[in-house]
Amino acid sequence: MSAELKITLVRSAIGQSEKMKGRLLGMGLTKREKTVTLQDTPEIRGMIAKVAHLVRVEE
Image (cartoon, rainbow, N blue to C red; front, side, top):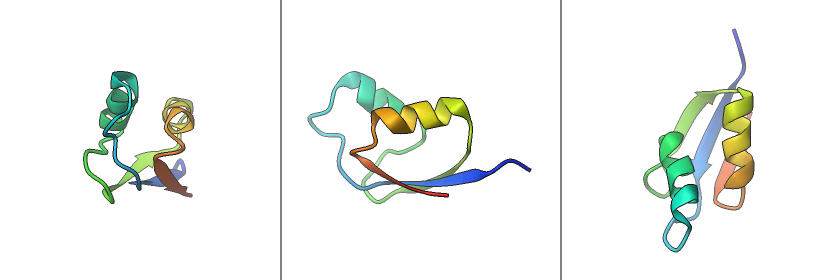
């Protein structure tokens, strides 16, 4: 079983670029304080790195 990450959107995507909004949507984060659980993959880690100032990650 691979590790999972718990990702919470802590800041709004308002005013962010369309690319950043797309990354958040790709992870299933649509509203502030929404939390999703995703598999720990290099693709997800890359998306998190690009929007790190908007999300909180728990392992």
